[in-house]
Image (cartoon, rainbow, N blue to C red; front, side):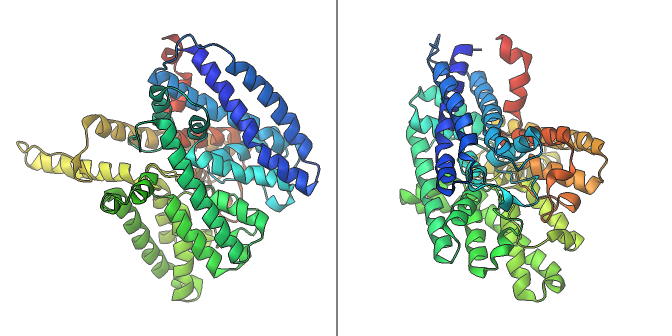
Length: 479
């Protein structure tokens, strides 16, 4: 393992995080509520230590794929540990571990919170909390690759480890250009959303915070009332649509910019994604019509909640804990499926689900016709054996880890529905679960050490399992 290149890159990460805290510091200074000091105490030493680490000379410029996975996992842990200090130093959290849980939830775009009243936080802290969603949505390492030039092979190793989905592709030959394209699209969509929210009456501060949560599919609100507190049909529809748009593979938007419309709209994953949304909205609306007080309200509530859950954003306009069991179970299923690969959403990803379903069908056909050569195809192209194998291993690892995390979390003595949905909500980076961690509740019901366990679950889910385990694998350190 190339320790020098790892330390050098960690230094770049720390410098980048210090820079990304500056907007929150500016907000703190504008509102003058006394939280600027907490940011300065964090930013200055982070920047100094980071700069020192960047001066460490690299023994060789090229990194291995193992180095890339190690850097990604270590970087996400470090930015969370550092990012929690402004929250803890400025009050509002009972312990550093509470603040860490909140920050991990922010960067992993989970949106799970330990706060009863987010509006009690100071504006700078509230902004940083929401801005972490925007940073984590596209990936902090993608941002680093955009602003700091590096070897293209090295950047590809980082992309494979950080970008969600069964495969990591490139939009253009150079990864720095790819990063700039991704962030350009991401920023443009976010700014357009902010303008729309302002136009429909949301105040400027809330518009930025809610847009950050929507773009990163995170879900942190700025008040206990959540999105329902705005009592605006227009805002609900806008956010519902944009949550779905940010759950689409960003490669499709690049293809649209290149006017390759046929290629962009022919994606099986995107078609399946919108069909799942459509069927789920109709099914839930029909199931909750008596609870919602009419078919119109039923579709309104179903559309927003389905958009929020499948994209793993976690915003809520109603307490779906009170919905019929069918609707709640369908939401749990949507938690598992998640959004598209290459989007800001979490979950298993629609492409993986498609591959698993097609593999299942292919296995049945192969059993019936042993002599027939049957291939799994996605978008008209055969899925290679490596992708098939990694998808199946991921699915098996996913189910095993959900069981393990649920077992550990149960040590706090809460009921199964709360524990299982809490693990699903954290591991899939969604936010709200059911029962005691439902949309109108929070994760303060858990002890500090269980919150640490759930923080690990959030990081493991965001990095899609393997980078977190490679971080602690002995062979990764020895070779």
